[in-house]
Image (cartoon, rainbow, N blue to C red; front, top):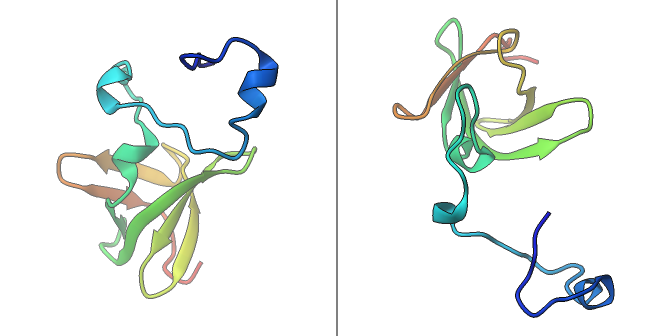
Length: 105
């Protein structure tokens, strides 16, 4: 939930429908252990466990079932963000993610 300055009820809030609302990174709480913000994943290089480069994360999307990485490379791939099964490691400092994913999938 958020509270917007000068917005006191639902009727006023409806005026913001369709608008982009952002928060400064400094206002967000630190991510906990084993937690990441999606914004930290965008731009990371994605490689398979065999070392095949698939591309970079262009964006993340929510599907209801699980989060999905949209990976832009020679082709666009939609890879589920499932730590421990598909996602083998995430190294934000090294800007890389290793996935158990076949390049032709």
